[in-house]
Image (cartoon, rainbow, N blue to C red; front, side, top):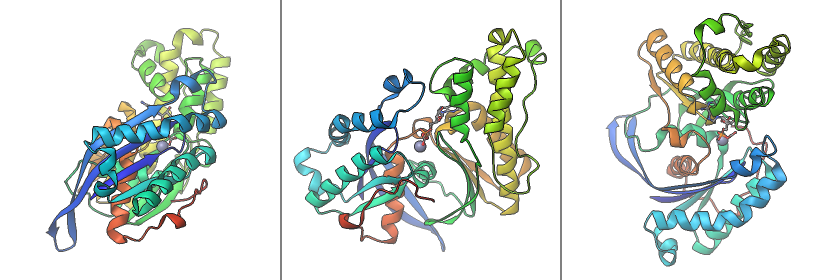
Length: 356
Ligand code: KG4
Ligand code: ZN
């Protein structure tokens, strides 16, 4: 099945083509799926939003307009599909309908609807978080066993979810205030190191000096003792602000503060994820979302799963599928199509507050 994916929920205009198929029955209840990526095009607006220190919704929407058709064209061309053959080659379109910035989402959704109408194809509306989760199913034939616990950490969301099977994903915990990625971005802003904060804090943290680390104020690990699977990161950002205010020489210790801040976030995420995996007897733990590009989080969660859980496999997406992309949206669309082929363009609408 050839699927065109489209993603415009925030500041990336993305389109991708996948060739996805059910290849065989691995056992009585399990299928093996083959998701091949034919093209993955992402046009990022980071350079534009950098000057404002974050994404400006109005600017993001305006930028999607001139980008969307060239990006879709490039996705078709890189997949070796001629424009005149698109209607006969593409089987379905999948597009992000929410959550996200409403004015940005509209550009992707209206483009997808127009193509679905012209090509007479089904168009599947995908939840952005579901898309991030399905980044784990790209180009991977091995079986992800259920139940799975999934930690999705992005600029807008921090969610722990329980996945019992395809099409059944339930939120069991989430952030009560800032998302983990948002916390990274705000911490980077406090220290004046630039935008987006996640990758910058990570690279600063690598330069930390062990001796200096002992001399800085330790930051709290939020919500560790709470009896649920929720997170909270806004207090951590305030704690960082006070720590910097109380340290005249903080500018000489940015790598140490970056390391401490990153560790506080990673520890909170890992402890709750392992706790959830134990409670729900998870056979797999999955990581997803833009913050899953963080090598510290990737390595530490992988070893926590190995050390603290028995008979549980760990999965994380390839780095290029961690931040926003359309391949993950097309992949989520493929699994929806297996359940039902009926997705008329008339039923498709943006839903910017959509829950999982
Ligand atoms: O998933 P994503 O591309 O967009 C949303 O759905 O929000 O995630 C973007 C977020 C930003 O907050 C960015 O700072 C964070 O992911 N991020 C990282 C890293 N790379 C991106 N956070 C920590 N470490 C990274 N290496
Ligand atoms: Zn995202």
